[in-house]
Image (cartoon, rainbow, N blue to C red; front, side, top):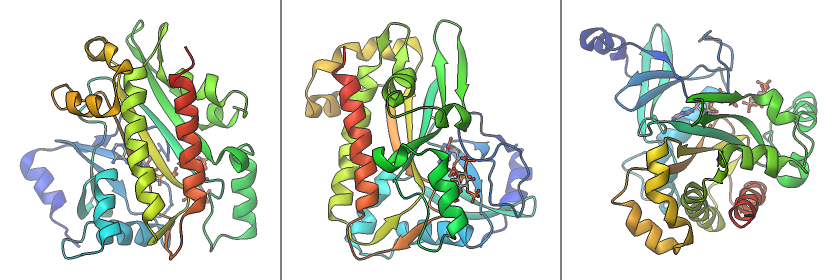
Length: 299
Ligand SMILES: Nc1ncnc2c1ncn2[C@@H]1O[C@H](COP(=O)(O)OP(=O)(O)OP(=O)(O)O)[C@@H](O)[C@H]1O
Ligand SMILES: O=P(O)(O)O[C@@H]1[C@H](O)[C@H](O)[C@@H](OP(=O)(O)O)[C@H](OP(=O)(O)O)[C@H]1O
């Protein structure tokens, strides 16, 4: 483990601040032996995530180290990297050890952010009966739809401010309102649904789905997909017409435009080794794809 970050920080005059775009997890700032995290923004496109108490923390760092191990030649593992935040090792700061990760939101001017926890089974094979019951009761529709929202923040172009919808709001949704009060609320700006952003996110989700169809290395419990889109007026206007173009055309044209949307897998405290297809994850992922397709073709 590296412990030079604190000194590096002081030398460079870098300040670690709470990550303003964080939408789930703990926001108390009590980085400590609790298993909850406040994400820290250290600038230059990096965030710090506290390594949680065992077994969560060691499992998460073990996962990142395996995926980003330069010596690995495991195809599944290498192909997963583009779908995760880039990992830059572990660092000690203020006596606590953190993962240093790419800040997925830092390239956006006004990022709207949504955390979607994937899987009807959001507890791992070592969970107690009490934990299983706690997870099941949190958002019962997840048993059918295969995911739940953990939190979101949506930029409002008119008021030029962010609306924060926490887990209480998310758990108050029903199967009937997931689309209208969940995905639509997230992707709506005034009278427009941000179809360009949905297209980009769908294309990336399909790549992730392809990875899951072939991989037999991991089982992912209680991980999230972090959806981000650019909500400042200009980028939406410049890409408005893209919603009617083919996926390949969009991919080519995006190379010349500022980033308009992104989606990455995050939160790996409950990833276990496996030798079979992760049906729990695939069901949730396909369900998210289904809802986004419905929204795309709704109006
Ligand atoms: N690499 C990242 N870039 C930008 N934001 C991130 C990144 N990783 C996490 N976040 C933000 O921090 C939040 C919490 O992250 P994460 O789920 O990893 O923490 P956690 O404490 O393990 O959460 P939970 O309590 O839901 O298990 C996410 O919802 C997201 O808003
Ligand atoms: O979002 P909420 O409603 O606050 O619920 C928490 C959320 O589901 C976390 O993902 C979970 O941690 P894990 O995924 O690591 O289990 C935590 O479990 P915990 O209470 O057992 O820490 C829950 O309390």
